[in-house]
Length: 99
Image (cartoon, rainbow, N blue to C red):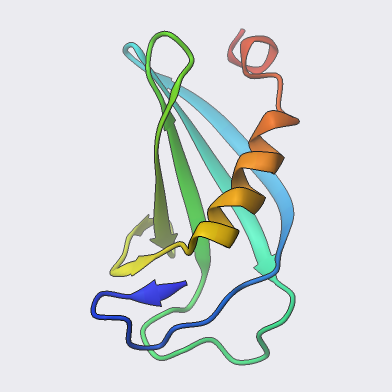
């Protein structure tokens, strides 16, 4: 993860511990909980990282947003972290969970 301006950069090894699927109109929001296994102390301004994956009405992933304490934050995911998130999302049966 990195903060705007590439301050406090680190590459997290994410261990997923859960998710919630919420339908909002045509959008499907998937809230992901994870632990960062390879970071002992989180950088200043990051306390409880998580992610929000947003799918459109056709089931296409539109965006992955970094959250801290359940809300948008100044941090962004690196490409490798996004790959980890995408791999986890592929294991979720969104159609089954939305019903």
